Length: 270
Image 1: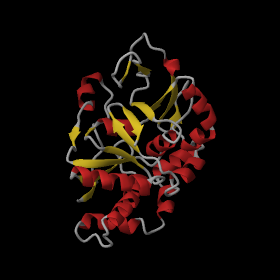
Image 2: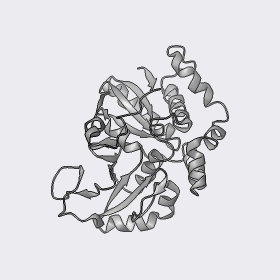
Image 3: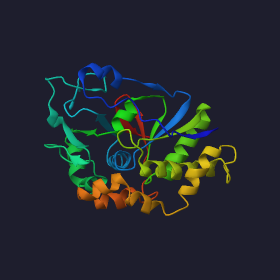
């Protein structure tokens, strides 16, 4: 079993013009891998937090596509005018900011603070809908039967699930840092390194000589990686928006045992 960290995968291109829509539907074949998608600030962490209180989350990369056809077996979000957006607890952000008229932003701290309210809405028949700037686009760009959501908060546990899944299916493991809209994000690289550290413990490997590409990231997570994240551009954006508590939460190692797996437009609790 080999462990690989993607250094240059940014998903399908980010496009705005209608003639480039086909580019947004590009899918990359990673079926030979158990894939761990890492979006530390904040999609992966928010998803993990939501799955502590519900069993599945519908996701979309479009603000407009906020309807789900409850009368079919299709799990995709769509624009069916017969559906009612009030069937959802809507959670989402654009560039870190809460979307207007949505219930919550992409904030794990806010989700935990409003846990009882969200549970009451679920008990009343509502589903959870999440839309993010970058994380959803990455997920939709990957073709694999085994796509897990990894974060610093569930690093040890997603590593265990990925190891067992890869071993059972005779696959290698690929960890994909989402980064930030096509540019490098230190927090996701650090998150990938921490998860790798725990996978290696299952392999009983203390020195990664079999894969020299892992050496830099493993050395990085032995350093003061929290300072690196807190001084990064993504963190500064969140601090400027008033989300400093999310930074503390998202960089708290192994505080969550829940692991989510992506399945056709939704993420379910593993």
